[in-house]
Image 1 (cartoon, one colour):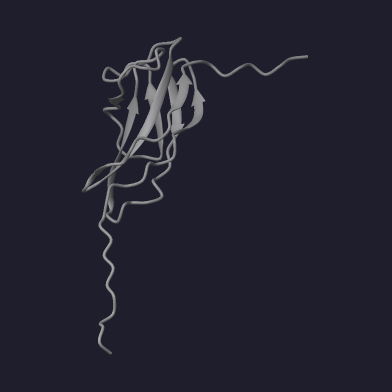
Image 2: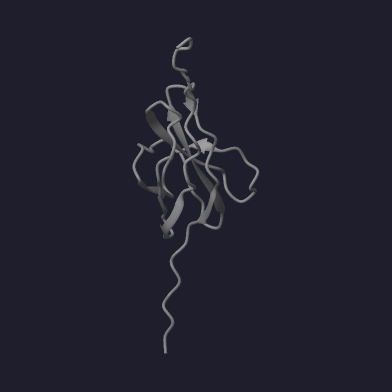
Amino acid sequence: SEFSPALVTVAAGVPSSPPAPQFDSATTDKIKVLLSPSTDNGGMAITGYKLEIDAGNDFTSAFANVVDYAGTSTFELLKANANNPLTTGRIYRIRYIATNSLGDSTASNSLYAALGDPAAAPTG
């Protein structure tokens, strides 16, 4: 035959956005979220994840990395954390980012969450 087999090369890229963090629970001292991995690593191994939170309540403030997040699938954002303090009465946006050697994914959709005790069970 005159032609050799075709070779297709696909360049690697950054990972796809991971799913939005899922709300697990909240108390007056912490917000607990569940985190799932990205479904597409972009052709390169995922090297980590970033968890970000905004300043709360205005829904336009910049996001900041949660400093003590270590890539686990469950994470508690603590009110007393000096690096990312939470304030009772504020609603926070929390998002998740996947990273590989080529860079960061776009951020996940945001989870909106606040500190607070769960509602009491109805009586009577």
